[in-house]
Length: 281
Length: 303
Image (cartoon, rainbow over all chains, first blue to last red; front, top):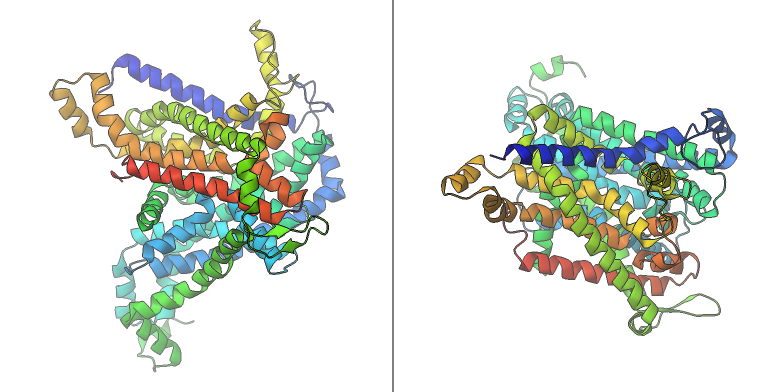
């Protein structure tokens, strides 16, 4: 269809954009091993020393512990509520179904600051002190849709006759769930959980509004950059956060053949929801 | 649980009755499944949005910084009358619009290559290559640009190598703009790719058979069919830029404040949650207008 030069042009364009996308990520990796205290390019020498410094920094440690706790708890909540919604909406048609999908995507479709400030006013209104749990509530709210997307996609691709066959063979509801449904959706659940973890672990905007005086790892990074202090340590911690988001996502992509990680920019869901929302106005 | 229990007909216990009921009445099953997650969304998320709306009409006592629950429009009046706020709102909208346009232009050829030129194998690889940065730490990717734009950073080294002198972009609006384009680019590529991939090849062949050259086919067939993808992508790029305040903090300077920065500083520094809540209505209203216009222009019709 396309002329030869068009194809070459498109290929070059794609190559350049890949460079654009990945050079900054590559720099993060290189700078983590930068021996100098100042951030100049080219990097003068390489060292592992800053990893040791960062690892022994009590502030970094407590921030890491809080981040892991928050991400784990938010993942557990998202996993249970997200799968419940997926099972509830699968193969059901009722009035208001689109409103539920709209509600699910709203926390990631609206700017994070809206979710953040809304929760901040809610907690302030209810006289709830900011704690680990307020962070978890904030994170879980926007992680639910990630699990939901993965599970519902898998359910849609699973044939209903499997369930019927299991029932016909005398298995009860619970047995069918345990021996038929769960094995078919297990990788989707794992992928959803990994993505929810990555999303929560790296979250800054909602966290700022729900953390109060506590520091998660991204908040520690933000604070350190703002003060312009401990930049070699920041390099290392940023590298760590990058790995802890990339590795789960790469595994999730493998588990779902790439499809599972498209959820965050999934046109279908958002457009459907926007359509429903805009239609309701 | 042994397999043997499945072989004989089990006595009907409570569990079996419940699962039987759910099987016969999908409605009951859906209600039972949906109640906990809906309770979460209604009691926490929707309730928060309602509280946000209500708080926007309250005030704080300027001495005690306690919230005074008296309904009034003073916050909104302040937003509309203060020229500095108007400027920040205009800057944010211009930034969001600019980022959306540039990302659309950057993403389109890339998505086109993915959808219609690349082999199946490289398509999958490209798909993952675009999605990984989308999930990779947001903060890390913004921080990388600090390393690039900083005075002795990668950019100035590169420019010096080319004999172009140096550009001091760090802490400028240009830098903020570039970073936004970078950060949100994958959000544009994926929807445009999805739209382009759905165009049947026969449409393009028909266009060619009817005598249209490449450019004409692009303008009259491909672009209209890709429009819903561009519109969906633009919702992400526009809305995400509208609400961001971390990039202006890290990469921007004194004149880079966006709507998000005003909201954040009013919660964090000034402790004026009612004013922050009122200001949060601004991006919501802008998004509503944006979606309304997009829908009016028929941007979602082909979906």
